[in-house]
Image 1: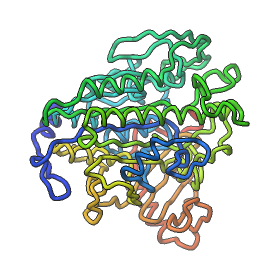
Image 2: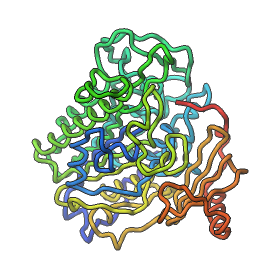
Image 3: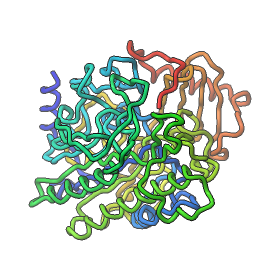
Image 4: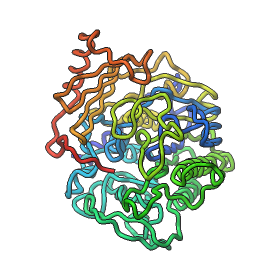
Length: 482
C-alpha cells in the first residue's frame, strides 16, 4: 500500500508558483536548517541584545522573516514528526518524547510518508545531517531510520538522548558507527533503550563534525543539470543542554570554548549558551558562503528555524538573555514561548530581500511547500498549506489555515489552538479550564479574556475536539522528559 501511494505521488505533477510553471524553471535545491531549543528572542533579528548572530541577521536582511511561525510541538520528537509528515499533533503518529521502553512509539512507521520520500521521488538527492530522533537501531525503531524514510545519506545522532552529549563516543553514518575521540561516563537513567552520558575526555565536538558534513554534502551534490537538485535537512543540536549527568557535569552548555563571551561577567553556563548560539550562527554563515562560492545561491531555498521554544536547562539562567522575547512560556508550555519560533527564508532572486510577514504557518506546511517547489503532489491526508505564495511575494494568493492545533502529553497534558487572532490554551488535558488570549493586542498572553468571549471559547474548544484523534500509544502523563 505504501509503495502504491509513493508511486502515485511521483506520477502526479503539481502546478507551478507565482504565475509560472515548473517546466519554465529548475526545481530549487532546498536546505532546511533547524536549531534545537532556540527561543524566539535569541537572534538579533528577533530582538536579542547580548548574543551575537550576525549571519542569521544578514540572512534575514537578504530574505524573509516570519513573525508568526510555529513549531510542530513544544518538545523535540513530535515537533520533528510534524515537520516530516505534514500532520499536526492530533493526527501524527509520534506525539511525544520517550513513549516508554518501546522505541516504536517514538519512531516513524513504514506507512508514514516523509518530506524526504516525496522529494526523492521528485528526483532530489536527500540528506540528513545532525539529530534525527524519529527511529533507532533497537527496540522497534528501525522502520523510522532515515535510510528507511527517504534519505540517501545521513550522519549524526539517531536517538535524541544520545544527542544530549556533544562529545559522544560515536556518531552514525547511515548504518555505520563512526568512532570519535571521546570517552563517555554513562548516566544512570535509560531512555527508549538508550543510556545517556557525558564526556570525561573530549576530542571531537559533534556540532563541528555535523557542520563539516553538511558542507561536504552540498559540495558532493551540486547539481550538474536541472534534473538533479538536492534536499539537505541540517538538524543541529545547538543550543540543547546536556542534562544526563546532573550535578556531576555542572555546566550542561557543552562548547569547546566561550569565544567572545569568555570575559563576560556571566556564569559559565550562560557563557556557554551564548557561545553555542554564536558558533551555530558562524556555521550557518559558512553554508551561505559556500552557496555563493558554488554559484548556486539563486538556485537554493534556505530556511532556518527552531524545533520548539527555549529551555531553562543545563545550569544557565534564562533571565540573562530573555530567550522567549515578548512571549510567555518556554519549552513544554503551549503558550507562545513554547511553540512560536524564529523562521527565516532566503532565496536570492525569488524571495524579496528585507521583508517581514505575519502569515501564520507551522512546521507541517513544509510538506505542501516543498512538494509544490518539486512539482509533485504530497499525500492527500495532510494538515499542510503551501507557503510558496508568501515566499515569492504573492501574498494575496496565500491560503491560510482555519486553525493550528497542538497537544502535549506530559505534566498532566495540555491542548492549544490558534485561530486568527485568538489563542486558546486548555490545561490539564481535556478537562481543564480553557484560557483565551487575543494575540492581536496581547502577544505575551497576559490577559485571559475567556469570560468575556464565551462564544469564541466554545468555537475553539470545538476545534480541539475536531483536531484530536485518539491514539492507543499516547495518553497524558506526569513525567517530564528532556
